[in-house]
Image 1 (tube, rainbow, N blue to C red):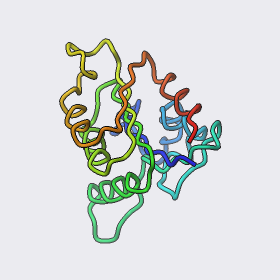
Image 2: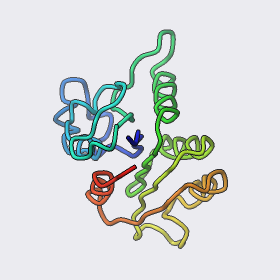
Image 3: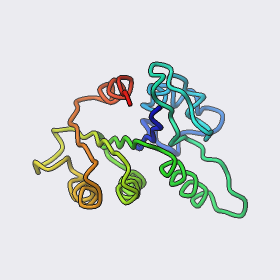
Length: 168
């Protein structure tokens, strides 16, 4: 069983999403497509079995991370997501569109932990042959960890298909 952590931006801006509309707003998000159920991508849990691939357990990230007593919202997210990375076997980093600093941080944290990492980039957004517009952090991660693969894809559907076909 592959325990997978997914990092990438949401398709809707955070400020437009609230607890009343979260399922509607995220129904077409990549995480929801990967898991097969938007509700299971909203709140952190021990892990979610993928609907279309029984070989993969989705361990994060989730839209709302669980709370840690005495911590700020930001600290909760960092503690929870780095813990999810600690528990995973594979980190999928989707850098096809713009990326949040969180995705770059998660990439570098996973590289330091020697996790298997697959990075998805759009081939049209770079002036370098290296690996997308985020070539600098990708190369820094590769210096820390040789178990990093960069794949160029045209759409998020290709990312979803890759995950649906993962085998241990």
